[in-house]
Each structure stands twice: as C-alpha cells, then as structure tokens.
Image (cartoon, rainbow, N blue to C red; front, top):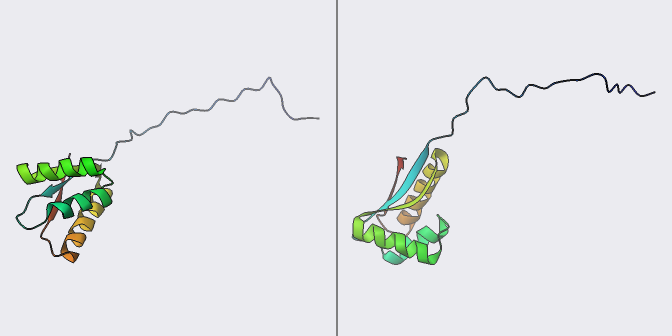
Length: 104
C-alpha cells in the first residue's frame, strides 16, 4: 500500500524576511586625449565592450567631440574589470587612453 493520503495537506510559505536590493550600477566611460587614435578607440569598444562597428564609431565620435563617452553600464566588478582591461590595452599599445567608472 502507498503512504500517499490525499486528505493530508501541506503548505509551503514563500515569504522572505529580507528585502533583496539590486547591486548599484556603474557607467564606464572613455576620456578624450590628443594622442590615442580614433581607430584604437573603436577597436577597444568593439573588443572590450562588444559594440558593433557603427555603435563604436558613434561612441568614439562622442568621446572626440564631448571629451567623454559612455561605453556601458555594469555592476561594480564588471565595470572595474573593463576599466582595467582598457587601460592595460592602451598601455600595451603606447596610448594614454583613460577609462573611468562612475556610480549610476
């Protein structure tokens, strides 16, 4: 015989005692300089930030004209990694390109 008894009901409480907050997001931005080539900036945007060529060109022009361009918005750890990657690539290629992050 089975121990299954349809007359017995069980309930499960799905309430949580704590509110879960979303992590803060950070804008990653490139800063304009007089030495980094536009081509290198586009390469960085395509390879590090997975932008299309068109989108990368638009961001690069924004950096060139406005002095700063937003590359993306990420959680802290991802933003920090992208900033470090950009600056390491820039140094390896002899460019003074600066990449910063700012809390959204």
